[in-house]
Image 1 (cartoon, rainbow, N blue to C red):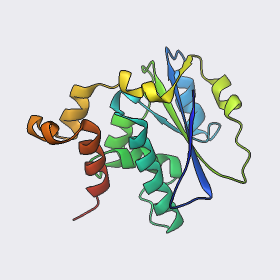
Image 2: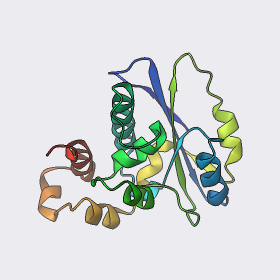
Image 3: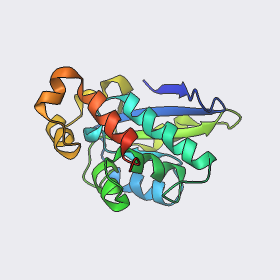
Image 4: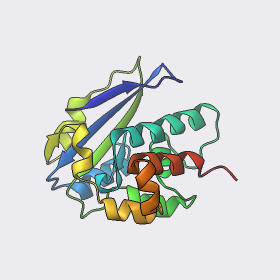
Amino acid sequence: MQLTQDLELFPEYTVTQLLFKDVKNATELRKMAVNGEIKGALINPSMVVDAFQILVAANKAVHLHEIGKMKTRSLYSEIIFNLSPTNNISEAFKRFGVSDSDSAVHIVLVHNKEENLNVDDIISKVDGQQIPVDQVSDLMDAAKIKKLYKVAPQEEKCGSLLDAVVCRMATKDVA
């Protein structure tokens, strides 16, 4: 159900992803995340092509955290910001963060291997059905993603939508 992966460049860190549908308490979850009761990034899965996209954003966030160059205030807000193709933080939260009306939530947790992560505690806070993270593509809005990342039909002929998205995420800081 959940997907847990070690970061290759930062082996002391682990990223755990949880995916839920039919969520009835998105408002409360968002408030808990803002108040620090949920130590994780709450992402709108309609803007996620694949779990790898989240892993790329988390890896970049940990890297910037480690070198002290984050553009946002927390590791979890940095993950949400890194998903965006633009450098506008508030726009990133609007497009990729969970809104009160969302019925699906993708939760991303980054933790040090020495830390004791209580995933069951987080799962218990969500009033919804947990589904396998590899089903995130079933929840995506491909048209919205293509428009936001400006993916041309010609580009999809030589690569996947995931390739296009990850490429734009990785190169947004390059001037």
